[in-house]
Image (cartoon, one colour):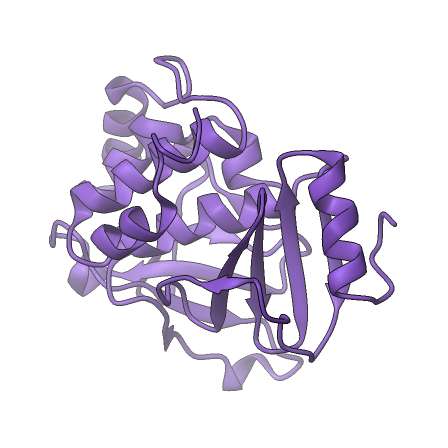
Length: 228
């Protein structure tokens, strides 16, 4: 797939408008920056139904759709943090937990009062030394947005020769196009054959389509890149 077939700017903008737009973004992004989604990349309805039966609740429509579309694609779900499999879903202090930080330091979920909604807001809970201070905090306004951001972020964090990470507080130089704001604390930029996410103005994750594009990024953004 070439850039004329996948306009990431338009796809990200559309993802902010609808759940269908989020899934179109994931499909286009996966194909352009990796491998197209296939029929075996998602979980079957039977496993999702079994999870609902075990938990005694209905999964939000958006969560079911995400699982069916790309739930088994580890490159889009589980390079840094982890999308729980349907049989791992659980309830914690009034929320359905669907994702965990890789060392168990934080969790993402949907409040039980919102699980009946098709595309509910998501919440985030950091693990604290004083567990009495732990609270569910607002995260993304729509679960489909959280899922699309997860897919993009995890792909940039993949252990791959064309992906890299650097701690940096610098802004990207001229020549990088800022893309629509998508995801809490994330800013996205596109350069020639490279995609960069700036997270919390503290570190950058990047994915290139060619070794030459990655080398050009190193020159444009000097720093202690992990893979350089």
